Amino acid sequence: MILPDVLREIIVKSGFVSEKDFSAAVKNSQELSKSITDILIYRGLISEDVLGNLFAEYYQVPFINLRTKTIPQEVLSVIPEEAAVSFRMIPFQIEGSELFLAMEDPSDLEAREFVKRKTGLLLKIHFVITPDLDRVLSQYKRNIKDVFTKIISENIEKSEIRKSTNAAQLATDLPVIKILDTVLEYGVAEGASDVHFEETDSDFLVRFRIDGVLRDILTLPKNIHPAIVARVKILSQLKIDEHRIPQDGRFKFKIKDNYIALRVSILPAFYGENIVMRILPESARPLALEELGITGRNLVLIKNNIRKPHGMILVTGPTGSGKTTTLYSVLTILNTTEVKICTVEDPVEYGIKRVNQIQINPSAGLTFAAGLRSLLRHDPDVVMVGEIRDQETAEMAIHSALTGHLVLSTLHTNDAASTIPRFLDMGAEGFLVASTVNLVISQRLVKKICQACIESYNPETELLKYLNKFVEENELLHKFYRGKGCIECGNRGYKGRIGIYEMLEVNEEIRSLTINRVSADEISKAAVKNGMVPLVHDGINKASGGITTIEEVLRVVRE
Image 1 (cartoon, rainbow, N blue to C red):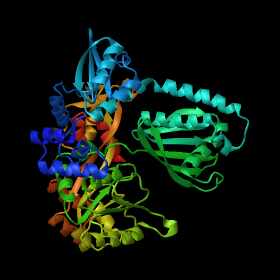
Image 2 (image 1 turned 90 degrees about the horizontal axis):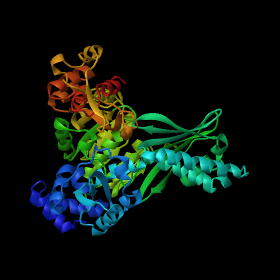
Image 3 (image 1 turned 90 degrees about the vertical axis):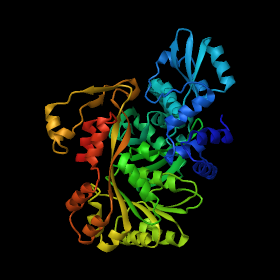
Image 4 (image 1 turned 30 degrees about the horizontal axis):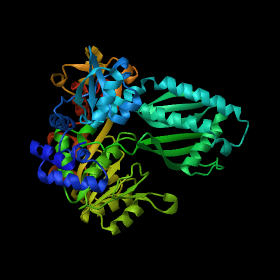
C-alpha cells in the first residue's frame, strides 16, 4: 500500500490538493480513524477518478473504472470469492491467454503469484479504487438467493426437530441463530435499508426495503416466529417477556471485516410482534456532497453557507427523503479538531467520532428543546437538532443561531419556500427568522437508472404534454433514458438512489418578504428570480444526464 509520505507527494504534486489541505486531511484521518483519501473525497477536494488515475500512474499500470461494469460469471469464477476479498482484487475480462485483473494494490506480489498459479494465465494488471472494488466484489453474491434459500430451508428443518416451546431457549438454538444471521447477510448483500419480520394470520413474512421499495423475500413457518423475536430481543438487550408494548433497541452485526449497526423496533400487532431493523453500515465512508447529487449552483451554495460561523441551515422534505444523510455529510465536513459539534437526535442513526450526540427521551423529559438548551452550556460551535417540531424548539434554535452558533436542523414541508411560513406559524418572530436562516434545502430521493442496462427511448406524447406543466417545451431534454433490466439490478432497471434538490438562499429580498409574512408562493417566485433551481428542474437535469428517469422525478415531486 502507498505510504502517507508517498501519498502526499503524489497528491500534492498533482496540483489538485494544496499542501495545507493535505496536512489537514492527514490530521483529521488520525483523529477520525478514516483514510486520508476518504477525507479528501468527502470534503470535495478531489474526485475518486482523479485519485484513481494518479495512483495508476504511480503503480505504472492502467486505471480501470468498474463502477458500471457487470463481470461475466465465468470470468469471476476463475478466482474464488474468498481470495478476491482477501487479496482485494477482481478478474474482469479474459482475452485469449490473458486475464485482466483489477487490484487495489498492484504491488502485492503474493496476490499476483496466487492468481498465476490458480489460473495459468498471463496477467494484465489494472488499478481500481477501493469503492469500485467493493461494488464489483458484491457481484460474487449473484447466486446468493439460491444459497440463502438452501441455508434457510436446512435450518428450519433443524429447528423443527427441537420440541422445546421456550422461546428464550430456542433463541439460543444454532438453527435459529443461523436463520437470522443469513437473513441479515442477504439483506446487506441486496442493499436493503430495512429488514421487516411480519406475522400474518397464516405466515411469518420477511420483507426488504431496497431503493425505497418494500419487497417480499420469503415466508417462514409461523412456529419459528417466537424464537426469532426472542433472538432479536436478546441481541438488542430488550425484555424477552414483554409482549404488550413497543420496544426499541440496537445491536451490531459483523459480516467479514465490516460492522453493520442495526436499529431495532419491535411493535405488538394483531397477529403477534413485528420487527423492523434499519441497516446502518458503520464502516462505509460518509458520502461527499457531490455523491449525494448536489451539483452546480447548489453545491456552491451549501459549501459557502456551511463555512459561515453562525446562522441556520434547514433541510426539508417528507420522511425518507434523505434529510439526515445530508446533515451527516455536512457534519463530517465540519468535523475537525478546531470545531466542537453537538447534536440532539431522534434517533441517533450513525455514531460520529468526536461528535457529542444525544438521543432524546421525552418520557424522561429530554425533548429536542431541553436537549438543545443543555447542549448550549457545553460551548459548541455547531449544533444539529434532529427536527424542529414545535414553538419551543424553534425559539431555542433561533436563539442558538443568534448567539454565534451554526445550527443545522430539519422540518417537514413540501418545498424550500414553505419552510419560512411554517417557521412563522410555529410562533417565531419574522425579523428573527429573517436574521438567522441562511439556507433552506428541500430534497427528495429518486431511484438511479442501472448503468449496466441503460437505454434511450422516445416517450409517449402524453408524458411530454404533462412535462410542459413544469418546464417550457424548449427546455425539455432531447433524450430520455431508462433501464431495460438486467442481472445487475435484478431486472428492475434501477440500482441505488440519489437526491434531487432546491436551495433557497436567504438574501435581502427574502428577508424583507419574511418580515412582511408573505405567502410561500411569493417567496418561491422571488427565489427563482434570484437563481434558485426548482426541485423538478434539478430532477429533469438529472434525467437528461441519464442518472434517473422522468417517471421517477415526477413520482417524487407529485408526492
